[in-house]
Image (tube, rainbow, N blue to C red):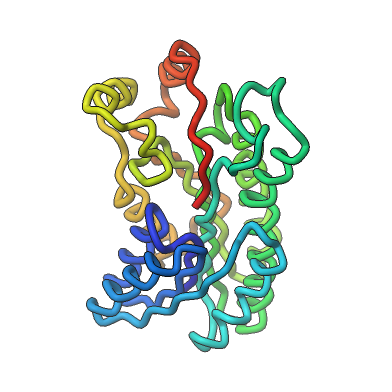
Length: 267
């Protein structure tokens, strides 16, 4: 299997969970030192681990990653499109009246264009292998509900969710399942600026019905199920893993009342 953005955060947790259950795991991204450390942890479980340095913002590199992974592992049966983020281009986040074309391109290249063409390349391999496969997209609850100050990011994640259901239909005749997870706020390096004090953590957690901030392992557990044979008849599904956020509008009132813009970051 291949996990993009696998050196840290959600990608790392997903890769480690898969390795602990016996999968051979390739991880890809820009953070080579972190990926190497993650690979060592995987290998300590007895799993085979592979590291690929690639900038997944670049669609050519994203497509080219697939044959590299296939050559190293001898095939590919699972692709987890985890890499994503708000981007670091001016106009990528903030009030929609301040959006820029460059910001739009940055967000959509990272969150939609590159994962899509990586998926197409992976699906061609899975079809040629003739044994089916699984694609899992890591989206966001922002793609399901209003997201003030994050309109471009939310729109990109909504596009990912639409592609998930469409590709599930198109690839289904080849026994390739396509699903998505829509995480809420998960404690990672990318979200660290929101959680710098104990007060901020308590404040954030209070707007989730489960009353805690999500952890990468929460997403990894869901990914493990959706990529397993236990979900062999599950395709075209978006699973919100968000502590109940999707069931309430309180979090959006919180964002509006705090007038907060997320940090500029990408995995």
